[in-house]
Image (cartoon, one colour):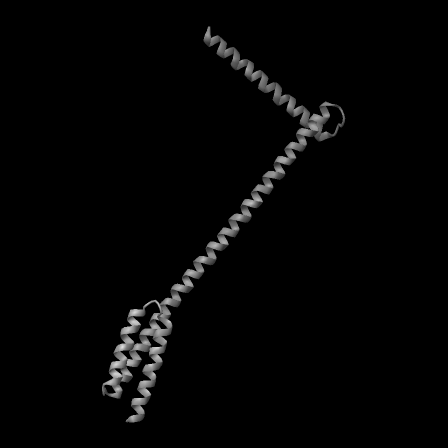
Length: 157
């Protein structure tokens, strides 16, 4: 009988230790459960009652631990996924800026080549094509401006 009481008290202490260890955020609950278990141990309660109480405390602690572990894992998953999305967006923006820089540099190279072909310093095929394309575009814009100018002037008179 004394051995059963000592065994139930040690299991009750073990479950109280688990309860204190895994439920720091519920300090009021831990305090009252430890206080009630201490008062039950001081009173001459039966060993089966203490054993049942310690099993219930242990199950409550384990359920609290499992639920908090699930919340921790889910929050860790959301943190990792948001970090991955952040890195992916950073890399895609860097890639987009790099691609835009390459495109603008190629256009500026063609512009410089067309200027160089105007000064007759180099006559490459791309430069001649850029020069011809630039002249056609320029003459088209000038003719459109003239047409719109005539339309505006005719509307004003």
